Image 1 (cartoon, rainbow, N blue to C red):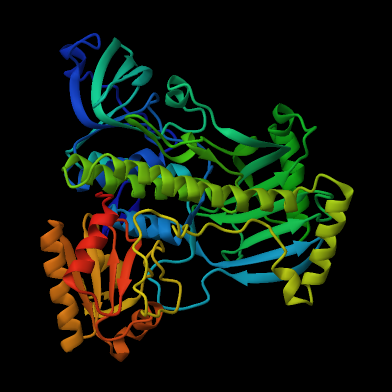
Image 2: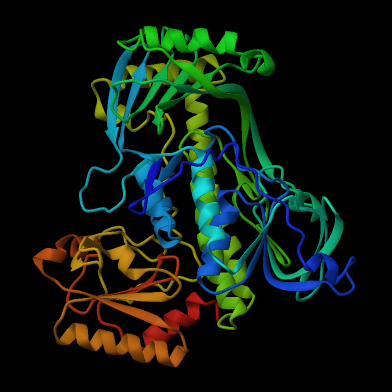
Length: 566
């Protein structure tokens, strides 16, 4: 049993849960592409990315068909590190609290060279954020919580054991051929979101492939169940005595499960390495290296993987938009895979809503490709650099790495060169065509530039449960929002300008007034605010424009630009 939303509920074994195949009336509508049932959006793939996208759309009153070729969730830990920004997205999707309550929150990492600690780092050194820097939570929990949230939304139609076999694209829709246990049928969609993973069937069906670099190395993942009295920290070893010439990563997960990643080298035999008789001695050697040596343990799951850093040339192909691993792939160092995929879904959802409601044209969907391709390039760059540092492929590279690690013990400059995986942060969309440049003469400080994700901060107001409020929760989801700072005449003029500009643009904009007082000092500081300062946020909480004192014309122009109008 466990607590969910203050209630005690039966615990679900998400790794063994089987979802029923259910025949749908669409299967009787048409057996071919002549007159199939038509839906606004079909999402292919019920992993974290597809589920997040479907929930986001349904919450904004867009009906969604969600197809998955399987009838189960993932097994094993797989993606386990979920970053602050992803948790903020999960908050908007209605399951953030549950993720954080179940997950292991952490922010401190330690780096070791051989058996000596080189340095430690704090991923969230500043106070005043609702969510932790990271939680560790097995992917099957994330998928399970999202699947339960999706099942509670009547606008999501989840169809298990429904495999896409073909696609035909037309000017204003696509037709999918779907294979089920009872045969094939067709369904039409205004738009198709391909969230079907690294071996994407849809990517193959549209004749595309991801290009990039494959790394010739192998890693063993072992989920080990044991009770250890250790803090929730990320420990990374370079060339430890218990696993010489290789690297090891050690993480705490819920339910007394610990994730261990052992670098094996390219010549390792994957099938042999997955055998318990070969895994157990590796784990025993790690534990013998510390006070943990007498801890009893049992293996829960293991896998051997290789990886690539790659992406598709374009994430949009006609009516099909690719997100997550179907569009791009990275190494696991830095936890950039699932996190960037959920951010893909967040970016795509509001744009699909705007297009389907007639608030924007199809060009807005091209901006999804522009923005998320740039984000993928940033993730691939960081992922490749981390992999090259962790797994040097020449003697010169290894000598450089080892020298950096030695220097890092005493010299802060060298610590900036140590790369055990630059951990996931959201991309700042500097070059987005949806951004409005700062007005000449308006001077701002800080990170909240157009294209950045809005920073959270505490609010003086309380929520309905009496808990302190938070800025990003107040902003919410589904609409544009304007943060108007101050409560005097300048703020009133800015608030009127927002209302008039939004009305002229025929766009709904929620206005949130943030006083310039002690209770909101962090928000004021993070946004470099003065009386009358306005930040315009997109529905995905990226800043798209800011002003010291805007007029209605400037607000309307920024909204038109953010919706790719003209």
